[in-house]
Amino acid sequence: MDSKKHQMIEGVIWKQLILFFIPILLGTFFQQFYNMVDAIILGQFAGKNALAAIESTAALIRLILNLFVGISTGATIIISQFYGANNHDSVKKTTHTAYLFAIIGGCILTVFGLLVAPSLLGIINIPKEIINMSILYIRIYFLGSIGSLVYNIGAGILRAIGDSKRPFYFLVASCILNIVLDYIFVALFDWNVFGVAFATAIAQWCSAILVTLVLMKSNESCRLILKELKIDTTILKKIFYIGIPIGLQSAMYSISNVIVQSSVNSFGTTVIAGWALAGKMDSFIWMVIEAFSVTLSTFVAQNYGAKNYQRLQKGVNLTIVFDVIVIGMISLFLFIFAGVIGRLFISDKEVIAIGKDLYRFCAPLYFSFVWGDLYATTIRATGESVKPTIITMIGTCLLRILWILLVVPFDKNNIYLVIGCYPITWIITSLLFTFYYHRYKKQTLDHQILVA
Image 1 (cartoon, rainbow, N blue to C red):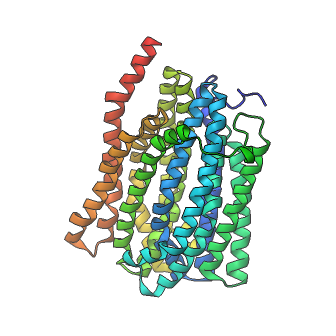
Image 2 (image 1 turned 135 degrees about the horizontal axis):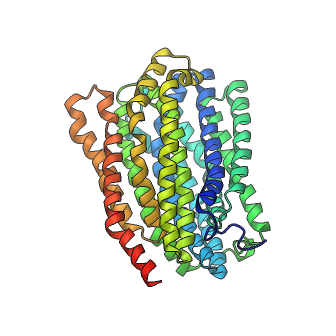
Image 3 (image 1 turned 30 degrees about the horizontal axis):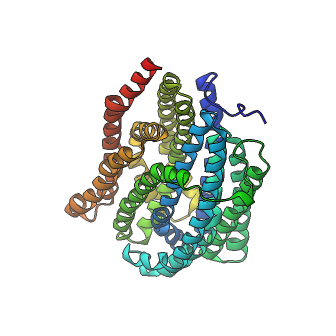
């Protein structure tokens, strides 16, 4: 295979961004799609308690997973930089180090999920009528930890060299499998939340196997040779330097969201289910944001490694424009059809009404998240990870916690006051990142253009 086939360091920028973005978006869509199918099948065949049981654990699951996912992001950035600089020996070392770490991390998460995570559910105000289902779900879900981390690392490796198509194919295959198993386990076998969690674990393992086989057969420098799996301590330190701050930031996001979820849980099962419904709708927004972030990260890292600083900045500006336009269109569509979409998930009219209103409350301001997310992505892709983490922790995580602790008590019965912390922190974080990028990072890149 031509080593330049997937490089993003030359050519028409907007075309490369779009061609890379579309498979990422479609892959994320299918991933969200099977998450929504979980909710639809549970809502229609098992009722709102089962739906609430899964949603009540979501923030805690993300908290546990995000540290390891952040480390995989660090590996992806490093591989992209090495690949852009044509340092293929370092690409090989990073691939094998990251892959072995994913296996080790998956083993740790499996044990943690089975033995420790269930006991944490008792501290986030999960209603008594759904606590047993929540415990069962989280235990079965974490049986897929190794598969989940291996897939994330494997897909990240392929995306790092500019290949976003095959990770998309793997997600489609796992999503189809997950949907079929969901229906069999829940609708036919009546396994409730156990069936959804078991189906997800199986799908995660299958996607991991697929990405592993492709990497083993690759002709690129990222080819995986199982007998050569080992930890290169120098490479691992570089991965940790970038990845751990990203993971800590994601963990802080999740901690703040666990606190928010705890406040939501205090409103009872119906509101939890409504909040879950709103979350299923705004997942369309977040999948676009995530897809643009992954696209920009690969583009920036490769061009930074190749020292194409002016091209890098053009890509950043184009991605922001694309992101705002797409999010605006999707937000408007969902705002108009929120009630219709809600009926796909559940027949409970009260839950639908709450979900619709909660989504519409946030919808007009989703676009404000773009600048903070993409400028943070750009800064990290150049290898600077600590400062973006600090900015996010202050602008998002800390402020959400303070909002829940200091503002919400003024009217504890107002669910809109609880979720108001989201648009407030999106705006503040975007302002902080916009200032930092233009005041410091852009000036650095401009200087490197002049001396290049």
